[in-house]
Length: 144
Image (cartoon, one colour):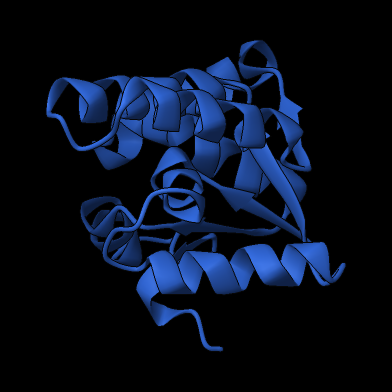
């Protein structure tokens, strides 16, 4: 089964934060072959930006970021071109009042008829009250 993840989940695979335990469980299920990870290719630049910010805030060292970056590159995630998702993503963003960045993940989820897992509570709550709620799950609700 395929599952779409966003940068808010990916970063928790490698950086201890709230819900990192749930993210670790998800990553374990991927390693066991229960799930395959999908994401728009922008996940890498978004995650890189999160790492950059954590260095600026002195939450991570440059050395830690180098290790995390190497691990992310080896992560078995199938990246889909943002270019092909753009038309649907822009429509989703305008319809539901979310950023095009977030809408890229939702668009991929909708095209692949699967679920997205996010640790972005605001995104989850915004989508929960819409007809798109069947596509977006909050990481905090993941059962071990």
